Amino acid sequence: MPYELLLLSSFERAIKRLDPNEKATIKLALQALLIYFSSNNNLEEAQRIAPRFFFKQLRKPFYETGIEGRLRIVLRKDDLSFFAILAGNHDDVQRLLMRS
Image: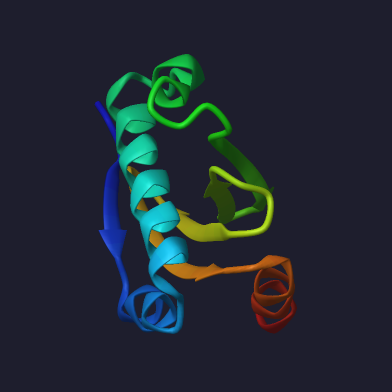
């Protein structure tokens, strides 16, 4: 059963701060993530649309995904759902992890 992806309001607020190119990158990363989930976590399938796509665990329950090293999406896992909570750079991710 594939994972469900839900976008939280904190994620949507973070996207509003991004420029149009960064928004397009986030959109592509979300598309690749959905393919990754629907293909039973097959990284090669997701990398067909975004060759530099990555998905990794930061620390439980937080995960990180993206298609470029600078811009990332932070997810929180809960059973069979992932919640997108932040879109930002490395410093934004570190601040989130320090608060959590």
